Image (cartoon, rainbow, N blue to C red; front, side, top):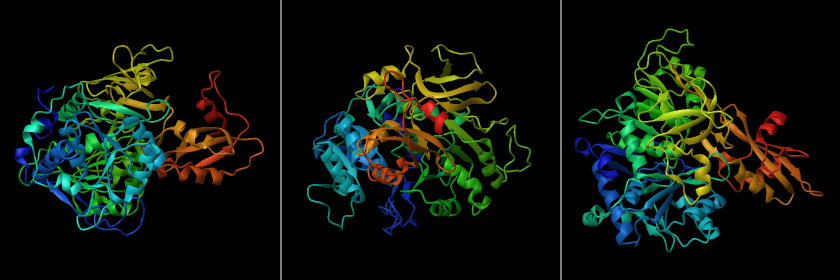
Length: 556
């Protein structure tokens, strides 16, 4: 671990790329990030920042938090923002001020916002006009007095009582003496993203300064450092389709490429046509994707090698991807495949990588390494630097290499714990510091980690976490529902989708469509229930815990 502050480590090499573009919106995108209505360029703003401007505005924002808004060290700032150029200013400025940054999915509805706000108790919420009304309702539901900052257009009015982003981030007021005086220990918390963990409702994950600095060090290792340090005309280009509010987007895409001076292109929402346009016309060199996007690139007839001609690395994570889907992408890029299962004969330069990580590991655990020549693309790769993995059998004891068990990992990137949830922290950690991921798998010394199943309850929809307990609680609030259970079932495009099992209340009547609409009105779109089945009984343990594996055997 280097003996320096997080911001010092992040900008260690910035003298070579101060005047390069750091982040910009995709100027051809004219779509609201929530839906398909016409809005304005970049869906939210038209801005782009050089690294010099990012560093300055971050310091201005940090100063304003402390001097104009009266925040103190360790106060929490949350954001409901899509991928826009202002996002890193808010996130990094919060950290530079000595406060704690927590991200919320901007498509969340008031019930979901209330849950995170009730846990974190923020002093400030930063959002965009399109989210304002929902944020106000969520804060009211949580009985929170938090102030609201709007990413605004200076020529447009903002609701009374809100604060304009431009007035606290785009002025000349930097107090470097104040910011230099912010003292943080490595074990202090910097970020609180949310994760479902292995069971229950989403929980705040305490990511420390140590975790973030260690993550930067791990990503800088030659065997898995995908970007090249920007200098002169050499600058890697990275489209940002992975949301920054997700640990993968925040740590890997944003911080992991800011540190090298890359040019990031933000997309506030994913649109296949827009993404294809970026691939063809913006000359990206590194792609970070989730399985549905990798499958889209491999199968969509409009995607050709012209879309991938500048791409050096494509990295897939957040959920498992089959070898055949990886091969489909590589065939389009005319790459000779080193996959042990592939018999084709194509030539090219693109390297396809898979990785495994979790919010609780600051997104980093394993990856296919650069230059690997003998690859099984269904593997998640080798443990990253300073990372140990082991597998526990059903008796809680380690199993020999190659045998299946619950994947556990120990490294400097493993979280401090779950915020305000000591019970969940203890349940997720071994006595000797390994995090129990809730995933089943095994390790092959030649090809690395294989994730084969899941012990934990969460459902992965398009790489996003859905907690069954959250949907079950909402379903039970319906007047016609006596009990409910939710599991994840395979979905051709989403990976998984929620399926609900409902016991009706006596004398009450309802339909699957009514219950699906009831949930859809309360949660983000990716949490919508795909199917509802009415049953007479839900299998449970004697203590009342739902036996999801039994449900899957019976109905899925």
